[in-house]
Length: 514
Ligand SMILES: Cc1cc2nc3c(=O)[nH]c(=O)nc-3n(C[C@H](O)[C@H](O)[C@H](O)COP(=O)(O)OP(=O)(O)OC[C@H]3O[C@@H](n4cnc5c(N)ncnc54)[C@H](O)[C@@H]3O)c2cc1C
Image (cartoon, rainbow, N blue to C red; front, side, top):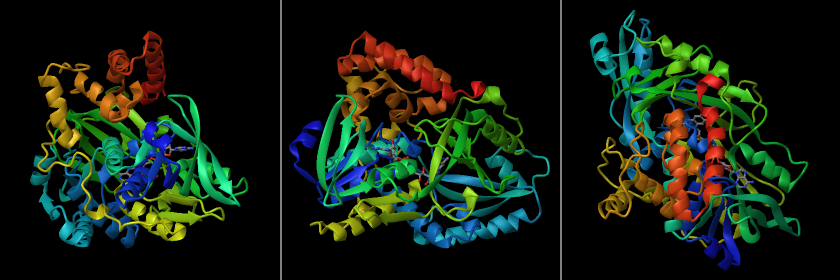
């Protein structure tokens, strides 16, 4: 990637930010034949894009809010993503449990509308369930007062793994994608943006590059890039935090997820099986200060525990939580103080300097966001470009008929290479920790093929160890560091330093100390 960077005099498109939005743009731009560079300050999906609820969905909540356009668009994107990345996105069934007489007909009707909106891209019809059928599918639901339920379908995915595979797809189509490359300055000629200055942190080397178009896709950091462009620029976004808690599977003990349609703050709450655990969330807390490592608030954990306990036979407590994590929503500013009511639609802005900014949206709609912003960029800069191809573009690792219970499923077709590494005895198939299904060969693969640079990259985003069990992830860090050090030819100081950095960061994911 560095060689490609140094060999290119001018890029067509330079994207700042390697989350869902930026990576989606990189895939689209490269597959249109544009000379594409993506710069990410930390690791791909280090920000919001690794901290979602992991749903590829139209958004039942947005339907409740009457945002029909967003729901229809997202349902269309859900269908396309299932076709283009069947190794990472799956059909997940959900139950809305009914405890009041009106809930069955009310949610049942709403979900029929949801089915209808998905049209031919639907994942299966919603269904009314009796009390017995509901308990059969979700045996740990609180039985007292339960009348029945409504079953519906949505998509589920692994967000950081999709991000890594988008980076690989972009690279497969010729893009140069760099992590640990933070943009510090916008370069200008006659008042127009013509490139950026950034530092590549691994080599500690500063670069200046030229590009016909520069796109700001930095999520909650959008305003900081806008301020680089113009110190007096108006801020565009407002930020709200959402957290998730992760519990052992026995609290749900089935493959069916639960959707609680109305919390005290009028939101929905999900409890979804994910990598043999359950992830429960989320919250909506307005936040003033953005950070690359947002901190979970104690009251947010209490909120989630309080609400989920009303629906489960066994009440989870603080000690049952394996991990907690927070994410920040980049929301386009509106004139309401309630962030939950702000639109999840995306917004594109072009400043006087011709810097293009894209913000808002959802993981589910990343592809459409990329198509929209590039259609504008191509016309604005008069670029020679092919048509958008991403509606039917296979994502790296594409593999039909995925067995989502197989331990290495999230590599898709790359799985074969990892299995080959184990077979040829090149690397052992030993587990990195008794609590995880992850093996040593994955560390080697991640370093060699997935631009994994730090212990955190491996434990948080190449695998999801940190989000699944923070304590076990901390215990895995020394082994991961030593295997990585061998691959990257680093010394013992590097190993010690990496383990220290990871331990400090991982404290944020242990619920008891916050
Ligand atoms: C709690 C929560 C749950 C969610 N659940 C869902 C869900 O289930 N389904 C769904 O569809 N959507 C969901 N979303 C929304 C979705 O996660 C976001 O819309 C999406 O991840 C935003 O991606 P992004 O690329 O815009 O931002 P980010 O992922 O934050 O990416 C921006 C990137 O820019 C980088 N950056 C910042 N400054 C610089 C710089 N100077 N130089 C280079 N790089 C820089 C950052 O490091 C970061 O990686 C959820 C959001 C939250 C908060």
